[in-house]
Image (cartoon, rainbow, N blue to C red; front, side, top):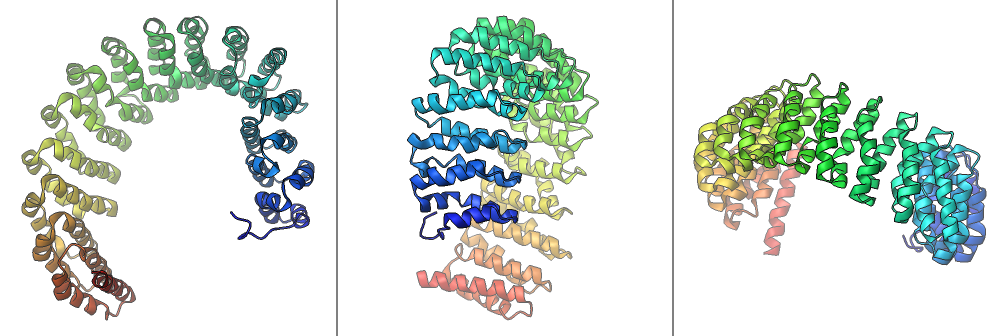
Length: 587
């Protein structure tokens, strides 16, 4: 935003607005801080504006949040990185407020500023700030402190680094669970900046404290830290330090901790290597797949394909497949849905024979599941199986179930089938498609749900593109044109939509001889909605047909519609006539 097109509010007005009782005025003035700063210049911004903001004790969280956000991008307005440190005091105050979202935004802004500051400024200003927040009397300051250590640490001297590690260790053992949670959340980021010698000693001792915390909310955040630490440690150290923790966590008394393990486990397999995965992590994962808490089974089921990719196929068939069979008939529909969303990805991992023997029966049972989301998730991933087992077997085993689902009582399932049809058509080929699925495509044009009818019209266009205009002329166009006389106007509108989508694919000759006469007949319809859709459609046909056809057939029809009693019909007819005139002028 330039200074020219924005009024330059003087500092006095800003101060008045910041003290105004109207929260909207206070918010507006905070959002104008960058304009004020440009008007004041860099020196006055540093000496007047920033101190004023530091003293501003607004009690509205929305205003404070806006201030925390603005200050994060304020370095250019105070004179560049050499003066960036002047922005720290107001953000330090904001880092201690009670409202969580304000503190988080202030910490984000502190990190953004700190990452641009010069090393000596970090030592003189940023590190003391981190220490002050860590020693804050109120827990909110200590929570915020955890989020800035990874910025402060790299530029510190060896002695100060030792002190910072010690302070972080104290934060990991703080009396307040909220502080320990923040320390657990940020441990991975902090660990990434620490020298490898201290990683195995100091960081792992902090990590062990957090994993043995009596609060499950702290332990589950420590699980997230496992994945981050796994990337930093050598595989042997992962086995020594992280593996026992993860195995214990997979049997934790809190289901929320087990849930986090189920989400993260596959990442740890990569960190520890194949042998410990086989001996320790596979049994842990099997336990999670059979957990008595549905939420844990959902998380574990959702990661089954990722986990199988890490294992060799024999291990997956031996240990994971029996659990997958159990989950496919789980009492919780959400577990079955989570499994259905990923199980198709197992086909490429297990190979053709294992897929045919073990997975196909599971796919079939899930395709017939009573819960629509389960069926949807299977339908949407069928192509992954086709690549493995081939179209012949897919059509024999799964196609009857697909045809059944095409008439499913849940419209979203029918919609998913329609969207899958063009892909299926390209894989099945013309002959098979005509036999099994051709009639269905026409049937959907008269569905009771508008989204289905619309998708069916789009589907016909995609099929015409796939099999070519000659096939479409034989199998689609005659049947579509027959439906234009349907007694219900909504179905007639669907046919018009289908015709408008088919016209560009079919080309000028077929459009003029077969499609356009039907559209002109529809312009005499008694329903205004049909007539103005005809006008819109004719506008879309102008680029497709010859200029002579436009003048002989389309223009007279539009002129007639432009005199219709209905205002909308007249509007769209005139719009189409204007398009014709524009095309003529440009040519």
